[in-house]
Length: 217
Image (cartoon, rainbow, N blue to C red; front, side, top):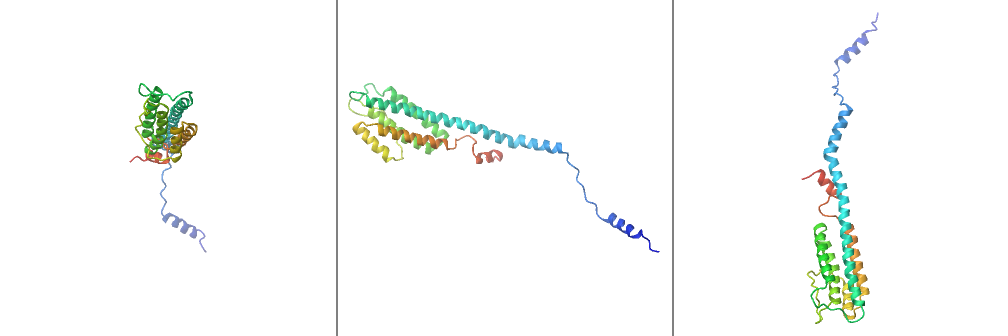
């Protein structure tokens, strides 16, 4: 008689001899969430928060400098326009630099310093191109009795603009300022547009800055 239980006993014996898999203890979900929260709170979150805040601050810096460029340039060019369209002989300076030119000189130096601090040499060079023609135009509008320029221009741009130079020569010769005024305003607008697209030094606003914040050297 065949024992029907024999194969079952053999199978049971085989299972008993198989190695048992090691089961890792189950990590509670709340603990995993807590650990992730700590990581996010101490590492990722500060970097993203700084990026958000710095982008807002960098935008404010750009807006302030752009507004100052527009205001200072506009007032100075308006002064030149009024001086050249005023009936009678061209105004002359008898007591040094006119107040309008002094105001422009101070504003120009302030803008130059801010551009150097926040944007670097390329922005400074572009501003020097704009400011030198405004300064030179004021010098033409207000001359000494001997016909000499009375407004010092401490910076000369290495950038060249044949159009601005041609229009300035025409203005100096014929005192026709409209063409030069429009050209200078367009050059100032070109500068401000480029500033709006540039990175502001000292602020974390780019992907590279974010990586540097996450993995400081």
